[in-house]
Length: 475
Image (cartoon, rainbow, N blue to C red; front, side, top):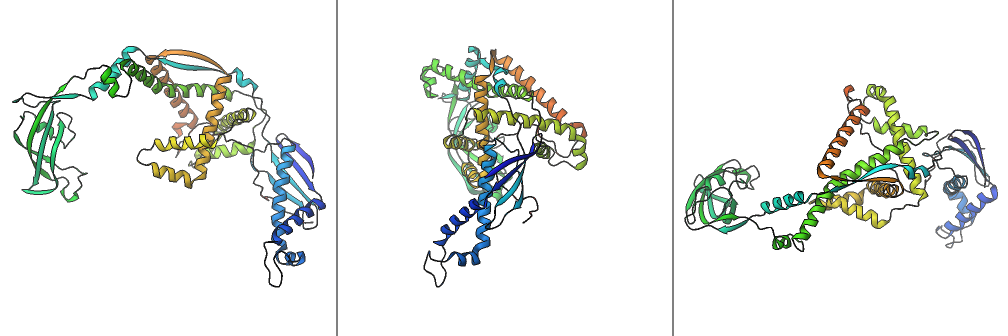
């Protein structure tokens, strides 16, 4: 195989590949030997069909299959040996080809720019940790205690009041007739929460143990018997007991009931929980700072085809007028997104970052846990959509790259209070909203607002799905 590089214009170049006749014939011989044992023709023993017969019946299909294989093998090798990383799919122009002939073709390639990632180590970003005041932790524990009240039996003759727990049996009728679902035993209601039927528990205020009480209520929209929906029912209630709320004692026993070792351990767990609630959002701010710094990196040239593809994504759903009005703005946004993606991808490749199958499956399980009750549907979605799994792989790959960037860059560690964290997050949200409005030029009211974000980078070497995109000439 002979390779020459021609017509160099910036990132564009032609890669001329020549494969001699002997090599092509070797590929053909190998293919004929391979299929000889699989073809059964009347009058010939298996594996003994003469090549001339095979050629006459299957020659064209065999040659096309060999040609595709040679193109894939030689084009990939030609690009790798010359350290050319294509920005998109190269165009292929066949010059000479045919059985018992040499092969000559030209790949028109737009190359990815050379990227220097050493300066990533000079990036500066803020890394936040939130110091949780003990008062904040105590307040959260008190709120938990209030949501889990204990109840003690009220003295006989006590009238039920708001926040009391009333235990009762009931039978219900509509127009004097009983109905399916109109009975209940040992039903418990905390008065004032209005969680049973609208207005039901208010009518139990003032009842005593052993008392009978008639309560009227309208059956709700989600009542199982659809023909009874919105009908007024009478509930004959037999009050079994009245229980008064008892203040929960926050002690070691309380902590153990929540899964902690003791109260001190519970405080540590709650403090970490509060911290984690802010950590993810603050980490996103740190990530945004890093990406903003990468946007400042200098690239001599960005492939025009990548810019065009990115603009199509940004302007998706817009009419032609809005696309034209926003074209210059979208071009700037596209360049930033592409630049960030290229830099991060180069950094990932130089540091040999890979995504394992275990990491990918862990991310799938994470997505499944985020949809409780719909686990099977989510699992089926990923099993039937390889592109969705590939997207997840890209997300994991990007996260691993950014984690390494954080380790190598210069972090400005800041310990802040909860109030300071909330202020930073609020300011960040406002800034993002302002940027969104500027980037989408909201005042022009396009049909669909484009989401301005960095493109997701993907792991791995460039694969070459070759297509004969130019009209071929046969010599």
